[in-house]
Image (cartoon, rainbow, N blue to C red):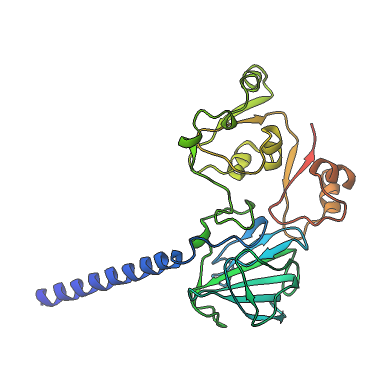
Length: 304
């Protein structure tokens, strides 16, 4: 009896090890042939793979209506049509066996059977189909797409993990622009504000200095100090959201309130909530009056 139980336990452990090897092998294989893929559009992350009770099989990127959407790699368009759920949607099969999906497009600029190149524009970001705001719904399938989406994998496996509200950039394999080049740039003046800026920050109570740690993002730093990413970029004269461990950022302490946009909100409703005008909101945030706002987008709503 003891020998029988021992054999059952051994078989169970072996099965567990095989399962783990299979899963890790699948994740590792997901990176093979995708290491040079380009991210499909500019915008903000608004939803992740596996949400909605596990039914959401891609990631959502909120962005400007009509902005370009690109193919992540060379391939052939397997489908290009209008769907009641995906809206205007394009499917692309790639030579390494993957199939990518680009949903809720405003316009489709590639037809079924067409060969497309990596980084080629295939459409524009929109709000068609079952959608609550302008965004790209993007899926990766390790094999052919099917109605049950059994082959869907998390795009973060290919592009690295992001956060809700985080800015992403098109046509880059690292869409978050987090570059581990601190050693190469150590001592470079571009990593730090000028000495005068640092000294002013220490002397005036209105500024603080944040030293970037490994794993920090512009989004997470802005959240920590309750300011907007736009404010941090402007304060430090950054060209984009690229930050590097060891970099020092000046954080303004005297700031306006920041509002995180929720699903269904409008500029008019937010302005009314804070007793300001729509003109004030658009002016403070550099927005056009008819420009859409996105869930998880940061808005300065009060200048102090």
